[in-house]
Image 1 (cartoon, rainbow, N blue to C red):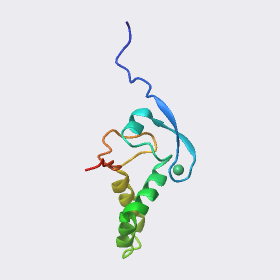
Image 2: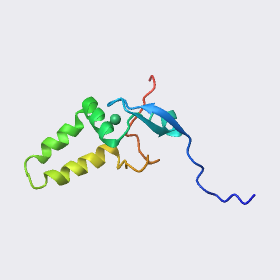
Image 3: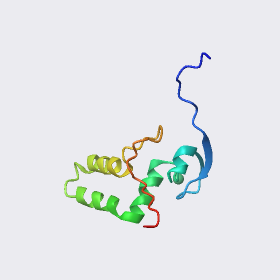
Length: 103
Ligand SMILES: [Zn+2]
């Protein structure tokens, strides 16, 4: 009765990282959406880069100015991961991991 509108503890499920094969836990809701495939955003970015090559493109572009390299590296990272945080999976992950069904 006195239950306030608190966040219900998200249901977590055991997953194995698609990249490094490390076991980790992801939110069941995210897994349902086709997310929760990677244990960390590093794994996610690297795996996505392998698929799309956009990460490498970002890095390459940043190589003209070595001073900005770190900054653009981070920017590229955020762009690709959709600002995905270590702390949690954002709900507005805006299609970073787009799952396309059969057209
Ligand atoms: Zn991993």
